[in-house]
Image 1 (cartoon, rainbow over the protein chains, first blue to last red):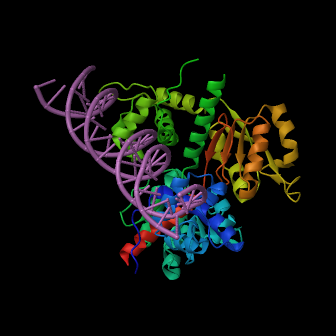
Image 2: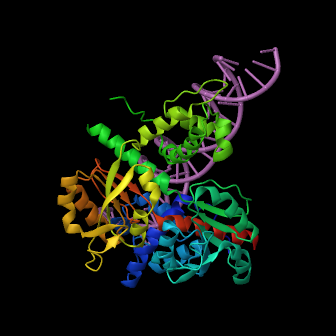
Image 3: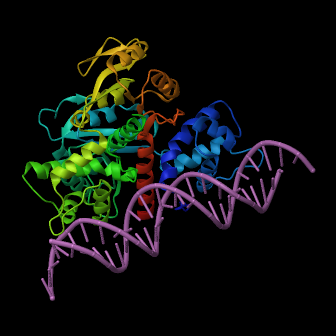
Length: 215
Length: 215
DNA sequence: TAGATTGTTAATCGATTAACAATC
DNA sequence: TAGATTGTTAATCGATTAACAATC
């Protein structure tokens, strides 16, 4: 197995999907080489940043020409694991959970939600985006049978920690956590926190400061 | 007008909603004073971090006692503008946009979506979460009439820049941008970027690295 | 050679963490 | 005094930016 470059910083990783989208467009258009200057025209990142980012993927450019889109696309997908299909469960089919199920882009990234769970008896049995909602009690067995090890967690704050622990017990190795609660889990579980409330706070704060300045 | 402390860093702001939620619970339970040690029991942040965060709000604690929840709640809401009601438009009623409309927490934070817009003639006229979807061409006038200056933008990548420019033209001062595209706008517009794809990338990367290590 | 480019090393900046001082 | 706490200053870390070298 080839060694993954560990120097890939998390902010770089966050930008990779943006690169990927543009590179795919260029590749489809038959472009053989693209320079950083051409890339930033669409991306609006700093050119040094782009070079650092691409460099940390382990892909070398060619002087006077630039980088090969095909090569970069392969490297990015490799790095993110978006080349192999990944299956995931989703726990908590509220407004947000349901939206994520309907969000086509996830599938494009090789990330497929294959089963949905909830505790609410009013929801269990209903369909959401063509999928029957199952009771969480069925999750552990199904996970083992299907070999699923990644989960999207869109549950209310109170349930976050217990649900996460249940997932870990069931052999899950990754939790994409939308609950706005910091989780306490063993080291060998990958957790990615998303906080909509945090984003809203940053947004309203910026707006607030700006409006105060203008007044 | 009292001077806003500019030393409030953006990461602190992102954490404020977490503090707020717990403080409200404590306040409702009649707690008069809370120490940082008590707070982190629920929050799982570092205690120094909590003190820095609270300190940057300009609220002083009392030795041996801690902080007054009521005081902190007021300071946080002031800082984020969550005390006064804020109205916003949403542009782009796809899966994600529609979910945000149904996401109750936003309203709790004094952030209310008061009108929804789309370009798709198939969507215009339909109802989403009890709101009639209007054609974007109606946005500028309605914004002026209602005095709305904040927008949630959940449009596809290609439309992001033009829609943003249209918003700015219509007097908008804040754009909460879910389009995964970096916007080029004048300085005096507050932009908050959210990238679901970026989050997914970070998640799958972490998972990938972890699984590679275990194998 | 001149120009366009990649690539690297050092400086800077923002945020967190560590160490310690101060106080009730 | 001892203990629990707030609060501050310095060290560290991660990421970006600036300056420059190297190459086709």
